[in-house]
Length: 164
Image (tube, rainbow, N blue to C red; front, side):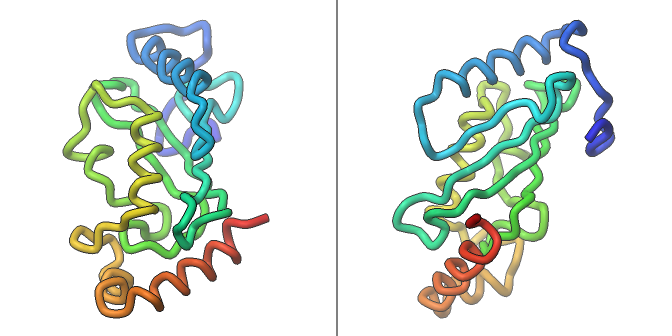
């Protein structure tokens, strides 16, 4: 995990504005009483690489699933967005392979956003897919034309890939 997405290792003893901000994001995560997600450094020697888990929202086909994500912070964080990679296979029109289509981790990024807000946005996307901005046009088409079948397949994938 040392060079995920080309990021270099960063020891705790090294500091900078981005490290202070990441520590603030971590403190916010630790103080968040939300049960819908969790996140933190993947290992104690590297604050730039995190693991996150989002728990499938109730009332959705993702309910009961645990969805894993890798988060990599760039050296110019928070002025550039973190890279978020999907690790759990999921049937969703805005998620394809390891990629997620979410404007706030791309062109709509703001340094005012935190990792908690990013994870909350991903959770919201699970509950309310956006078929108008899909990563997978076939899944988007199914969502628009046969939502019941979309939900059935999404539930099947959740049971197969996201439930232990």
